[in-house]
Image (cartoon, rainbow, N blue to C red; front, side, top):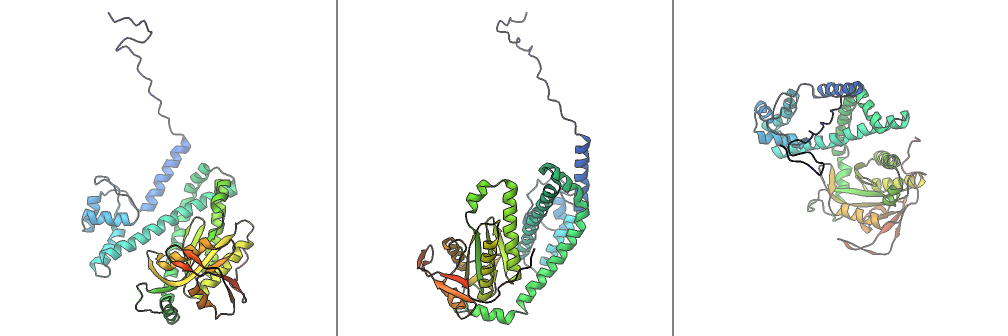
Length: 378
């Protein structure tokens, strides 16, 4: 006889079995969504996932370790050895870099670096493109974020070929522009490099003399707390697009953007000054953007992995933090490089103690003449 249960609980072993939560059945829309994702993935990958790491490495004729290094360089995470995650297209793509090493065109370190450049840049580019398409759906069709993302997946098949074609064209055009900087402008570039901060081209540990500049939105952190997500995104996008246009027209290079700040460089002090002036003037005249602090410094840099490094970059960053809203600061070396130009006015400022540099004599850069960088009306 089972023991009584005066407390009202079920006797031991007689408890009611817990109810199993019902597994939701996907709706027709959800089934179509997942089917569309699978179809799109097959189209993008070009083949079925049939190979494990070991099988892919065997096809490539390399160790599993070497295959993993290339895969990680492209920006993808490690996977278990027994997971069939790779396709024949993956083998073909990775074999291109392996062949360059085997044929003696590249060493392994350079091949990994080039692979990483492709992985990092395309990762950022893809995220940028998807978010731009989502924002377009939200803004122009008044859709929710989730619905907009669903529709982007549905419209992507029609956009893959045009965007891929544009990417290939842009890469070739950018490479051509880089070759022009290496060849057509070599004489002026070498002459400018000889005017580096230390006055010595051959003894400097940093090979390139460049104008390095920053533009930093004032009070961005406090403003971002008062903005909703969409307004914040629009503000950042407006800032980046304005800066990118000015830097491009001015013949400079936008090295990177970090939220409320852009880093650029140019081949001569004058080009750097023109870009800095145009950035300050354009942002000050913009009714949406807050004012900006800007700096530009002429000196030597090390260029690696699409970024630039060295004391010149650090000094430019320090000067940006010291600048008043709407103004441009340069250091004394840059001021001397620009003082012979009638288009610029350089106003000495009180000396400042700058971390890592000691006492620095800033100069405020103002326009004294010339038309500057002319922007098209947008």
